[in-house]
Length: 193
Image 1 (spheres, one colour):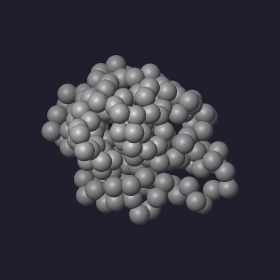
Image 2 (cartoon, rainbow, N blue to C red):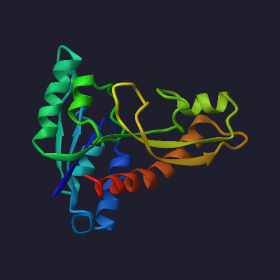
Image 3 (cartoon, helix red, strand yellow):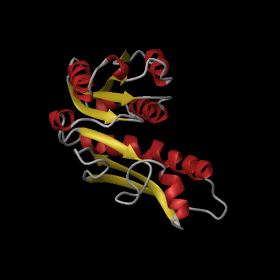
Image 4 (cartoon, helix red, strand yellow):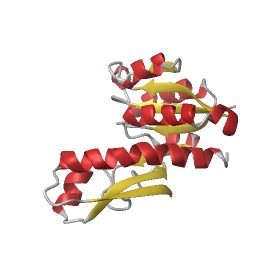
């Protein structure tokens, strides 16, 4: 069985989309895969409750309890490794990971970013796209490398930037596409691991 470990920091809407698609697409039978665990760096992350409702192991490794990023990442890796992951999926995980953590899961650590990379890595992507006068925005699924939001692109989805769009309206439209794109990209990668 190919185990997927999802890392979250908040509400977990992308995590929920992945779990729904794994169930709907019967990934256990079709891909010999399952979402084995959801791990958050925040105990108040809403996605943990959803994971527990779905009978998925849900854990917290609180970054505030560690003196360094390296110590946190080592503890996080220990928690991830207990589930023997084929893939580690970042779904709204709001921590920059150390090169050691990224290297440990090289080629099987994924992220989704709310822009059409390489445009607008980092934060405030929707505001930056609107301010730049972009006519198109979107989302990118990529492999994680030590350089923030610069890993090999696995999939992208585009949405129009409409006249009068605010950060919030554009973000909502992009998020709808993220919920479709991320599970498809994960399923595609599962076929190769």
